[in-house]
Length: 451
Ligand code: GDP
Image (cartoon, rainbow, N blue to C red; front, side):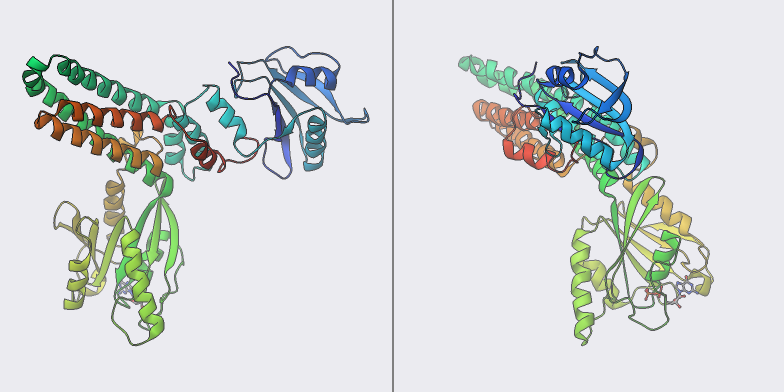
């Protein structure tokens, strides 16, 4: 089972600082002999034992719970010892130091989880979910990470892979009978299965995007002329005084960020400088940065005064927005124009909303709309945590499968099979069937020590 390491690693597994309990974790082949030397006798596997924890001189430092997990029934798949002491930094450092003197070496960040991966306790996507769970900043993100950790995403990947393999085998079998090849490859059923696979990939990539939004949040960019009410809207959404609201045009020169949560989904609100042309170099710089932010944002709100509506200058801004950028027009200050809150649909991606940032009227319409945009609500139940690595990989798989479909249409069976093989390998890389040391280093180095 233990195919990884000859050496034994140790670390404090609980966060730095004081706490009720602190844990020192040791993993590796030398754990049983280390236990014998430390406690003077072996420990039974997977039983909590109350023991004195001594320092090197034999003096009792603390009394705590020692648990030995015999390989392979442990987090790492190796022999593991956990010492649960009182959570004081000095006690834990002394315990750790003793473990190091008994032959363990300090663990690198994420090394326990890396060993769990290398010992087949979890696949790579699950190992990544461990850190996403620890890092999650909202309930929804934590639930999505927990689903991934339990293997929901890996299961989907394996299912897709199986479909790919069956398709490829079908095509390769056809290639073995060249005289019938044309007929085999022209099979409508084959094309149908290919389409089905493509649809499923589209669905997976959609839900991964929602997963990434859950983890990283939706970046909502608020654009508008000075005094349109950007800061007021920001404050409304954030529920507190985040930006300085004044009546002098152009006060919010700098890009200002605010993070809020809507029902557990994080949202970043960015208030930018006004977009009008200006001779003032400071303001010009603000305008340039505002456009750079547009590129980055997941969703753009353009806010105008409902009394004056969209100016020709603003019309130009709307035209200049990338066509696939989700965008809404906010007609603010309806309390002054005397209108009721409203929503009008421009097209699938775009709506006009009438509201008042000052009185709060219509804000709930905007919140509901944003929530719908991120896919909050029921659909989140199946969302798994996702990283850019996964999104990129699925996009690559989609590319290969679409090329394969083209080749199939052109009756190029061999080329189609090759594309499917590449797609299959890319899927395998998501769960770590093939991995480079660089990739592992990149993933696990972002973990904390002791995890
Ligand atoms: P910004 O320059 O776009 O950030 O605009 P501000 O949020 O600073 O607002 C400019 C002025 O308009 C302030 O005096 C706000 O109180 C006022 N204002 C903003 N939204 C509304 C609104 O919905 N109704 C009314 N009556 N005043 C508003």
